[in-house]
Image (cartoon, rainbow, N blue to C red; front, side, top):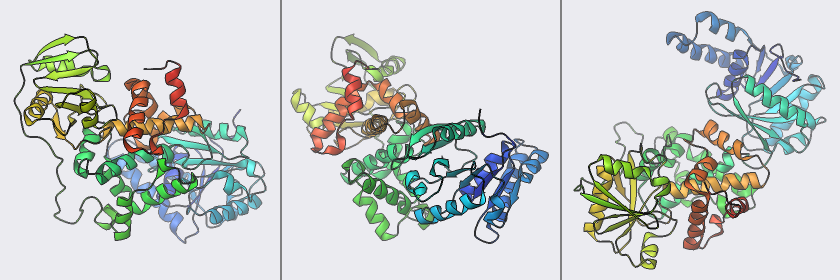
Length: 503
């Protein structure tokens, strides 16, 4: 039986955007809430901000005025920590400093009962470290919400080394009762989301640094082919490069300089220049008044082919066949290794190699790699990477084929793994590694990445749909192309492929 009911008093320390949002979530679930902030007047302003935000829902018919009044009425502003005494759970959402958090929780142990659960909303500090100075570290748990807390579904429930399992269980159940999607995780650097998400930024930054494509094109391919809501450059501009770079450095340092988490020199330069993104007016994009956002590279219209030959099974790209047929193109199917032949061009899904290297291996100068898509039937864009010696006629034939299938086509430089494929492969690999290191289970990885950062599909589920053996091959080829440990496959991925879990 849970230690929490709707009568349980919930304390929230810190009345900024996150703290006020958490207070709103608890009050909406029916709890009496105590809201405190050390800055004079901040708690009252936080409560007022909640009320103003909810008034917008009233105007849209999502809530009634009486419901808003009742919700806000359950949030009581207090002016001292001593008034937290009745709380069954106290959640802190304050500055990310270990010493400050330890001090606040130490004071709360003297004020609250021995049964009071203390929760930290930290996104980067070890829960174990926070609890190391407490008298009752077994009562401390991580309760990591995502911004904005009233909207984002994920809550990472983080167990420190001393956290009692039943407390983590009850916080999990409480979060679920608040309409959230909780996941259990161990207190390790980055927990789930901030660890598994690193390749989303890192691979985009590396492709850009190596001249694979410009930032607008990479963002467009990630959105329109990969199905993500934002590309890596739009997202880091929104987060702030100072913040995003600091988190990357923190995770890199915490994992003893593991090259998987290597920070980007490109992003460091932006931080050094003070180009933090939207908040500074300039990042990868210019946000000054009148500035125009650059357009992605999109190839001009090419002739539609009359026929196309599909050699073998295209696997995850099989929906393309129906698109070709619906476009009035005559499709012939033969045995083969999964390729598309149109005119002089040979098209294959990227396998993590340079197209030019693969072209040399198969003695086909007109080989063109195409990128992964979330849903080939619905995606609006596709990226192509021709081998260096591919002739212009063959490239035009490939472009015309995909344009006939309803795709905007972006030609990118020959870069291993292209854009979506290498990003998804690395996200899945990091997810498997988190599971392998017993941070969480596979289901938690997918729930966390969809619920915390709005990924269109959980990376492990996505990799399984693509085929784990294909993902493993991409990673191995990336490793061979770069000669770097960064792309080493997770032991768990190796084990699953060897055990027969292909798709």
